[in-house]
Length: 296
Picture 1 (tube, rainbow, N blue to C red):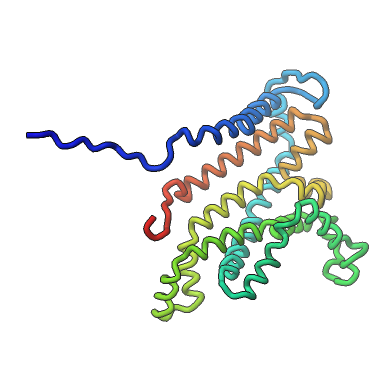
Picture 2: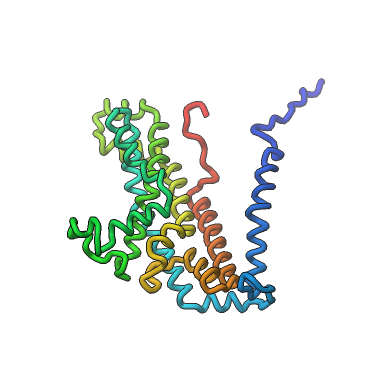
């Protein structure tokens, strides 16, 4: 009796050596700077003199500071409200612009214009539009209110400006996702008498679930890094009404010259982003996702 021929194990995909360049860059430009920031969070340093070891003093100071607590609350508020605003708007715009009609392409160009502008330019434009003393506020009574000077309104102005900047990007994600859905699904649904709304609810939304997870992860984790637009638009004011965590880190480090505390806040931001990203990946089942393309 002869032994069965030995079956050679086949390995799918590239080897682990393909990841070496990316891991090297990630180590040099992410892991090493993060390690330096962690060490700095245990020192007292004004940015010019010699750092002095202080142990956990910066951490106890930051965690007991009510300004930090308020900054964390405002950051969570911006994160949640931004997701609630941007997700449905991006989803609907992405579905609409995925059509092949020419007028939709023209409208898509208009929708995507904010992608071409920097955060600083957007902030300056909003400051000019919302200034109660001149410009459009004199012609449009609704804009006559001091939107940026009111502690109750300024955060929602910031959220609106952020949405205006980032909705086009997420619209692109949803547009690409909708265009990947097989047309046969819609044709079958139309033959069965399903209208546009039912097709959207029972075909488009389920087919876009991976895109929704990706967009939501980028939206929520990206909310932790909002800085430039808020800095130019409000500077954190009035008072501390729009002093979100990233801006609080900058003011602590470069306005108060306390790099130790600023480093502790930076570590909090990095840890929050990591936990949030891992949590979303785990809860959404992102690691178990498979391609929905036919034949894949």
